Image (cartoon, rainbow, N blue to C red; front, side, top):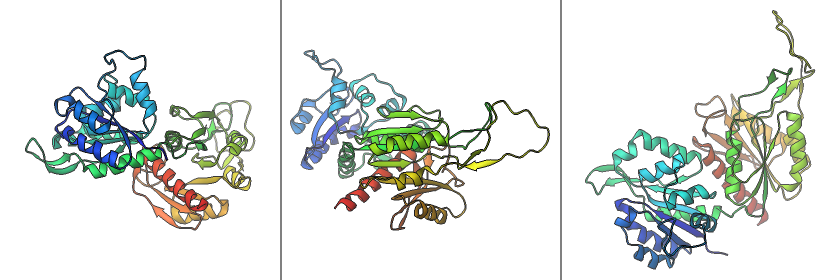
Length: 401
């Protein structure tokens, strides 16, 4: 089994002196480590120390001396299984969140599409500042694993949350992230996302409030683990994740056709889309004039895509459904999983605060084929996606064992 490749970013805080011990800890666990040292971090820790412990040159600038024909930030991004930034200063985290790329570490971050772990370390007032809170929320939404700082006495003499987390905790997250980066290599995942629009006339449609954020988060997480990803999406305002094959549809009928066409390629199918259950029976070819009085709209059922995929499934396929429910969400979701026959179902109560359509967070219950239910706390949708893929990989490993 190849050694995990961890790119360690060290930024300019007093906790940078601990990076030497972190390199040793990661190396003890079997990882190959390369270090990117920012200019300010150089004031706290010696490049020679880090180079000796990692057995690799330390990378400090986009323009090395002597000049190299390689494009440094691209080569490092291609090499790494994961990027770990410890300590991560408020400045570096803010630049990551806003897409700035004015040094080697930030350019590598923008060129990297795998898992990222950040371990913040800063004064407690800086950690509690509203800008830092917004920065951390933005990074978590994009899928970064945040190793929260600990409380204690700081070098500045103040006490509070802001001290770098324990090196064992950071190393644990780094090794998990490195394993994630290739855990789905060689697999194809089909993910559906967003709403469907069922036309009433050329102007109006029957639809729902789905933003597509959950499905796009699952697609991005699967791609970051090395999978080939087919994303079948209804109308959304979201840019597709890098490296996925995007198939855009509008109606439930179009999504049904796209899913059946591409399902044979996929070993994993995750049906996040909020597909309309009904459509207008006779859409008008012309805009329907204002009636000025009550009128009736006849609706007919759309095709049940998930049930059709389960009926046509191959032995190697794992199929996950989503259920947006209200009321007794768990009971309704359990009934839906049993009726449709999928391997897992992810249930969320769309009436709950912070959960459901158009939010950046979700609180879900996962029910498996044995009817066992697992409730997760309110999480960023990308974190829900990561946990879901972990859960799927665990279930599949048990089946194949």
